[in-house]
Structure formats: C-alpha cells, structure tokens
Length: 326
Image (cartoon, rainbow, N blue to C red; front, side, top):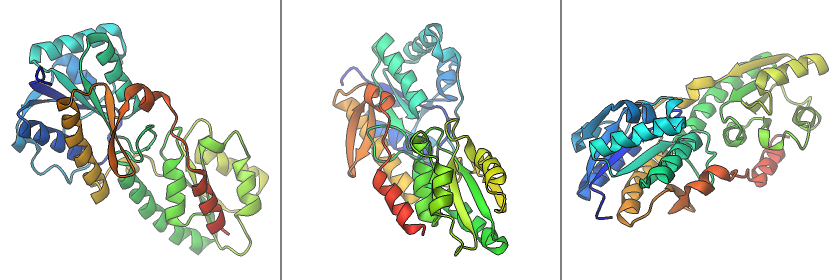
C-alpha cells in the first residue's frame, strides 16, 4: 500500500525461540522494499510508553541464532483498556508508524485485532508461541525448538527412570493445548500423554494404567500438559499414590526451560519465511491477518479465525502413540 512508509514491530506475550529470526526477517524485508522500520520495546507496554527505536539492517545482525527476543516482551494490562489503546495509537501517529507487525500468541493477536478495529491501523500477526495453539497454521514459531528441548530432557529422565524402575510424570507447557505433550511423547518414546483435549472424554490415568503400564516394562514415562483441565503432573502423581500405591512415582516439571535456547533450523526458516511474508502482505494491501503456513505454503488467516477457532488435535497421532507404547 502506497500510504505505508514506516512499520512498527513488537514481540508480545511469552517469548519463543525464533522471535529474533522473525524480527530480523521483518526488518530486512521492509528495508529491502523501501520501508522504514521502528522496533518497539516491551510489547504493547512500549507502544504506550514510547520505547521505540529506528531499526537499520545492522540492528538485526547476528541475532538469528539467539533465543528470547531482543525487543523484550511484557504483559500490559493498560493496553487491554480502550484508554490504553488510545495512548498506543497516539504514539504510533507521533512516531509516524503506519502499520504494525505483532509477533506473539493469541493474546497478542487479540490486542492487534482490537487496535486495528478501533483505529483502522493495518496490523499483521506472526504466530510466535511454543504452544502451537493458533488456528490456521500447521506450526508456530518456537514450537519445534520447544519440542526438541522436551525430547532432550525426557531422554535424560528415561535414564534414571529405567535405573530405578519408576513411573515418571513429566509436565510440559501448552496451557490448554496438548501439542507439545502428544508429539513430545511420540518423539521421546513415552508410554502416554495426558492432554486437555481428551480430559472430558475418558479418565486418561485409568486408561494408561489399564493399557500402557505393563509388567514387562522396567519404567514408564507419561507427558502431562500443564492445564487447569488436566490438573498437571502433580495431580496425577497424587492420584497414583492414592489409587495405585504399588508404583514408585516421580514428577519433573520442565517449566520455562522449554521457552529458551537457540532456535532449530526449522524455527529459523519458518520465522524468516513468515517475516518476509508479513511485509509482502502489507504491500499487497492485506490487513488484520495472521501469517500462517499450511502444507508448507504461506497463508493469510484473518485474526478472528486464528484467535477464536480452537486448533484440533490430530487423533491419528493418539493412535500412533497408543500402538507404539505396548
């Protein structure tokens, strides 16, 4: 669009490996296409307080391999109010920012959608979250790295689980989405995954004890998605102690370990592709869409779809895990 001369870029919500690769791609693609770029620090908070710096290509040199985000990130309660968003928009006008690119999860994209609706500002979202829970994209920036971190941790846990003939519950992130737990379980050769998507259908612990934990095994590992729906790993460990006291149970909560680390090649590549696509989308006149990847092709997903629709778990993956855990 001819009216867009300067774009702002921010990272919001939880950090995810690959965010820096996305910042680099957005900055360089914008400059390549003749646009000015301004980096906004600390997410929407920085948009309100005016923590903004003009970015040149050298500002994003040597960051593609770094975890976290050079722009920092922060939660911002003020931006959730109409008054806060008004101040943010006034900052954009003062700084000459014509369009905004937001890298983050569903909360971050919700903020971008509100800003776009209230002030007619072109906003493009990049799915930056390890949870992989945004609808309309096969994968999100950071998910592959987090999955590999889980894999590395579970491989190490298995060594001690086998040595002591124990049942380990390993809690992984994902909030209300079971992608990390399910795919992590398949990749690590775990015996089961307890995920929020199926919690209302069956007693997942009973199913696991009945089918998965066999006397022929010296140890078992179960991945549990952190969630109020599942109750987390501690909840299931307590249940086993009470209902199946014959098992020696241990719990490992991986926590923020999963968010850190240098991004994998896959995350660097999709972040780079999505970053370039976000500038292309603005040049084409697109607005208020999330950049996604489906079947290895870039797609534009309206914010409303990406945020409101629940991303379904592939039940075929559950069958794969069940068959391989005998």
